[in-house]
Length: 314
Image (cartoon, rainbow, N blue to C red; front, side):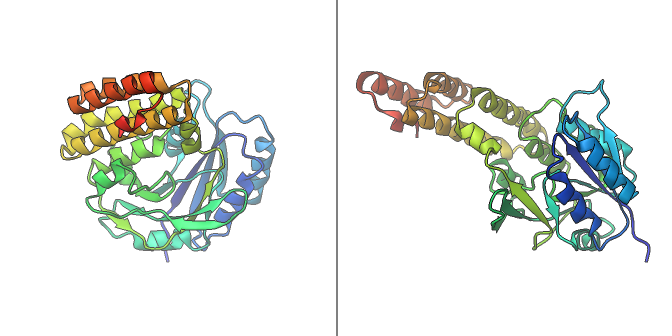
């Protein structure tokens, strides 16, 4: 039986201690016709030596370095890997996650002639305890509003794309982004109305790290918080063009998210509290949420006078 080529594209940076598990899970696939393109983002550990051994062990594994003239980052590596790939189907994978043995067989079987992408749920597992937790939700209608607010998440590794669909896109991964790249990429693809097949059972295991992005955001890293909001705000213009019904959904989500960080900062008496409150008020004004503006000013006044009042930011 003729098996179409599946390209697995993996960016990596200083993951020599763990990428071997990922590559082993690929080698062990029951589906045989795959290529694995690993693109190194400038590792300083022994990734070169490790990958040389894997390439010698299995010629389907190919190791490249990000061109020095291109911006550093995982997104650049993903795009470069796509340029190098030859597969009819594309799965961007991560250097610390794992395939289950029948993953590619199951995913390939789910494609029909008009399918643009097959999305698998992921089995989350703790990187330290290896304890498994619930699958992520990938299928909820209407899909775009659910994805906007995080009720649905594909992550980077969940979708396997038909190459011909990707080749029609003006842009794949945005190499200027440093966070929520998967949220941005998957939404931009969804705006193009791909034909999607959703799998019921997880085919991959997604590793949860102690120092996750959400953990860094909850630690009130102002640079990351602002980057998060800039990316989300950019999608308001895209939604106006491709899915106008999503504009109020995302606006409300942005406001609620701003309020969340303000309440968190005031509760902790964090030094960032006034800066975050100012950003919230500016966003409320931009979104014409004048009732919210009044409540925010009342909250600031109450906090200044009585040392409390952050409940106004609800």
